[in-house]
Image (tube, rainbow, N blue to C red; front, side, top):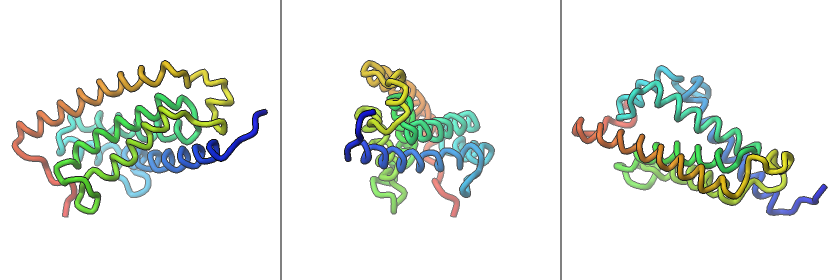
Length: 179
């Protein structure tokens, strides 16, 4: 057994923290946990901001966040997990972009931070304290990084582009929060 160093511990902490936040965020959408609205409520909201069909969009976003977050936290299939979470956060950032960068104004700061962290973990790898390491990196090969980012990037560009065209046709984005 190889000894662990502080890089491995740092990656574990980063994966566990980021993955945990993503799991919580995704399960709000999927199951209504942690004060979320579940698939019905989130689907209606997604539809109102241009992601259509809303329930399918909520399912995909929730699965990318919760599934990607869980896999990141475990350090399993790290390239795919990080890319999936980053793609979901790119979709969230597109919604918040009209409000500027800072989260206090409803901007995309939070989504960008989570997405960049997930993408960085996908590229860097999980470290030795991970299931990928335990399983001999069967789901964490160097060639997987560009492959999953190409696939997720293409899917994200299509989904966000379709959403942006819908919003443009409707004339104006719906409010992000009911007041």
